[in-house]
Image (cartoon, rainbow, N blue to C red):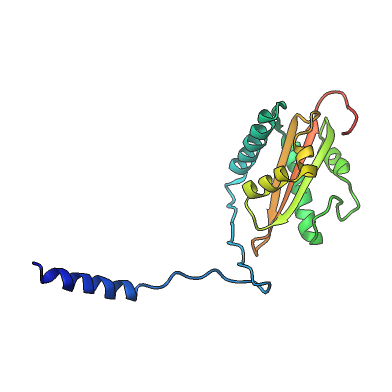
Length: 179
């Protein structure tokens, strides 16, 4: 039995040497690793929207702010803008037709008023994108708006994996001064 142990150990060492080495990350022209592809499935819409809503509400509650509710019309305005940013190939707040965020929420029949919009062009997940928004003082101020009580969230993913994220905030009730 003791003679069998060295043979078995030798066999395991040889077997381990035959295993394929881990694939190193693919590197981009800047020498940094290329992002892993995050694919959003066709059935993921509600899961992602409610996950973002829950995360935003956790941030807001921890800061003493009232929670938001998800609004289908704000989701539609966010989706339209995400697709339009992809068409324009640039992240910015104006549509290819010159529309503003206020124009977009009116077009979808939103009955409240526009509070703010956050956008992103990235390969990152919704959680990573939301974390970046929450970490930046300017975009965090939008997320924490006292005035907001509704949220819309949507995206457009290109075939290459790039994702265009849009978050819309609105408020029902009488219009208050913008922050």
